[in-house]
Amino acid sequence: MSILITNGRVVTATDDYFADVYIEGEKIAQIGKNLNVTADETIDAKGKLVIPGGIDPHTHLEMPFGGTTSADDFETGTIAAAHGGTTTLIDFAIQTKGESTIKGLDTWHAKADGKATIDYGFHMIITDMPDERLPEMTKLRDEGISSYKLFMAYPGVLYVDDGTLYRAFRKAGDDGTRICMHAENGIVIDEIVKQAVLDGKVEPRWHAKTRPTRMEAEGVHRAIAIAEVAEVPLYIVHLSSSDALDEVRTGRARGVDVIAETCPQYLFLDETYYDKPGFEGAKWVMTPALREAWNQDELWQGLMFRDLETIATDHCPFCMKDQKELGKDSFTKIPNGAPGIENRMSLVFNGGVVQGRIDLNRFVEITSTAAAKAFGLFPKKGTIAVGSDADIVIFDAERKETISIDNPITHHMNVDYSAYEGFEIQGFTETVLSRGRVIVRNTKLETRGGGQFIKRVGQGELLR
Ligand code: URP
Ligand code: ZN
Ligand code: ZN
Image (cartoon, rainbow, N blue to C red; front, side, top):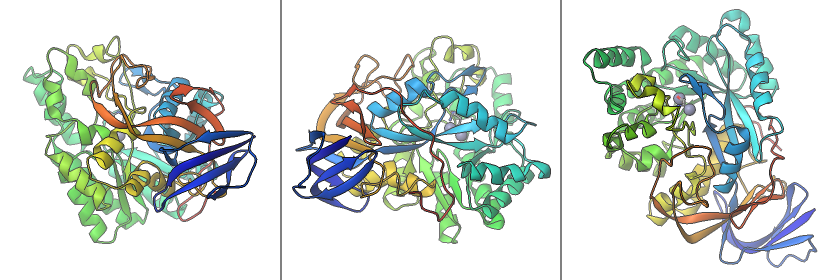
């Protein structure tokens, strides 16, 4: 099968030009003006942007958490992602404490295999790492799992102590892989939470009030110090506050190999969402919590000056009915997480490019290329170049939509609310190709399934 995309404006992290893109099978075969080729199908992209498929390096599909399981699985979640212009995601496999990480990986392969519409990889969440288990990390790397996530938060669930952090960091560094860190001092936060509950402060807004930004900053500071000594590249996930960003800046200025991710929720939402009437604030109970609005300008600055390198969603949807409701009597029982996998590209385009904060190249970089480079997917993914996978989004920079649970064009996620209800955005994904297959055409799903597990490579290697 061959496809010719004509007349589009091709934008990558570094380039911006008008050209045709010719796809043979799964790969981009030629790029040029007025290409003299015959294709099985021609797609006219006149007036549209032709950009690399988005890469969302932080999602939680079918994740058991908070006494329930996140509402999107690999079928519904990857379809929603595709509609939003994301063609690759990196989800998280979880090691059950005391058990093999390889077993955890097998469990997540079984969840995804044959269900996904877009390509995917896994980070491995490490919940314990005694010396005798360290060789598993080399095996994981050889299986294409070239990054790990560890938690300073959620004591008794996913939390690990600093000794475990150091052991895992050392081994990951030796193996040429990367560490992702949920950086928040969960031990102190648990004490603050305990006191709040004793004082009868149990409404959703206390979730935010019991998680100070200083405890996020402390976690980031500690993670950077440990990574520096252990000599491992570090990636701070879901960074939410100016205090935490300052620590990243300080570490980078010192020469530490640390990059950081933020998420649309921290760029566009703020802690006043918890003050909505009744139990509605539960929709935004996520960790880290939404912050005071002034933090948003600081995060945009971080994106402009490259102290923040990627925007992921941390998509971890729980329905209000039966799931968020588990915490009706106390915020401590509300499953942590919110939906967003479908809205990322439009939100960032609107808030970034349309509002004049970043240019088109930086938009592509923070939604695709930088994640490909950080996580061993580049140049197979994350760019439009001869030899790269034909993961391409035809994006209408002028089209306006209102994000809503009631707008079938903006909501395919399997969750009963939108975290961005009523947001008016400019910039919308129209047609999406995944490895040369049209999976979404003019906003309609055309192909279901066919997503593949991608074996990622280590730091400094290229994936072809
Ligand atoms: O609230 C969140 N972020 N839930 C997902 C788990 C995590 O910490 O990323
Ligand atoms: Zn986390
Ligand atoms: Zn997460």
